[in-house]
Length: 155
Image (tube, rainbow, N blue to C red; front, side):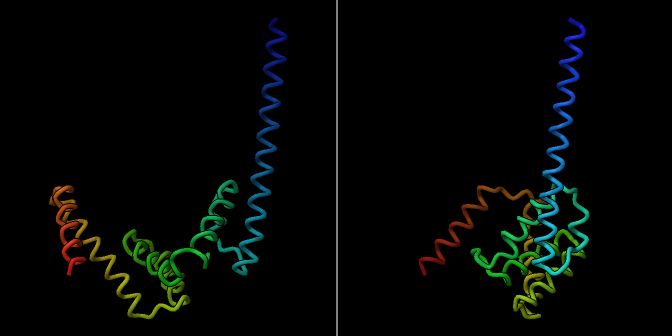
């Protein structure tokens, strides 16, 4: 019985190892395909992608390509990049600020639009700090906001 349990254990270990190798090969193939597509799309593979484990490369690239670089989404490229800049300004991320500023300009954003996106990020951050820090009642805030928009709509 002990020998049988050892054999079953050894078979289970071998099967697990085989699945791990097969999975690793699939991940490697997926990363390789993603790297090829990044190269074809961007002309090079930026180091930011190389910081990811192979298992994450394809998913990260699909997210960027499917939303940020996709011209067939609800938001145009300029709007997406101005949003990216606004968020980057609040994180803050100097890498993202640099990238999204250039990407916004490449998508037609003017210097004034870039300034306004950053200013909007600052305004939202300011009021978020005030509302949260002052512990303003959320239900009251929502009612007052709804009332403001209802009045504006009626005029």
